[in-house]
Length: 200
Image (cartoon, rainbow, N blue to C red; front, side, top):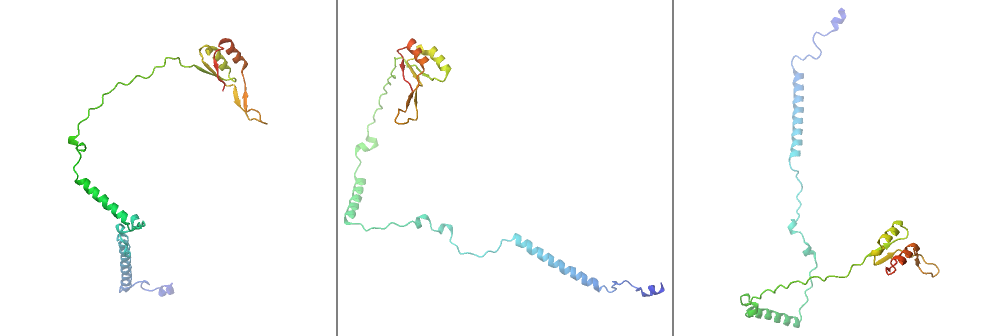
């Protein structure tokens, strides 16, 4: 123990009675603080300030070429003596027209007012005294169609049954196929033979 106590230093290892180490550390911290503050100020200024872009000497939009500038200009053809005379005569005629006094009929204060035309009553539309046609349609495949034909046959003027079909003709045969309904045809012959039948 005596040896160990002898080997121990009498003062702390990092003890600096003159304070030189603290002065160095303080200067280092101060320099770092100044550098960090300067960098932060530069960064904030670069964000807030407008960037300095190079100036490009471009023309303003109003002075740029327009569609009319790009369009080809018409070629001016020298006028012939006939065209020159015609233009001169047209100008003289226009000048004489402006100098010549107006005809009384063209002056509003001298024009006689014209009475409005008398309103004539419109003729009534033609009245049709004839009875309108009653047309009935009939199909073979619907049973209710036959029952309706029985009920209304006496009131019909024309009957249009679906008795004609167009089929795919082969070997020059007729493409029209007739499919008569015998019960309906017999009913018409018995009850109203004078009815007009227009198959479709």
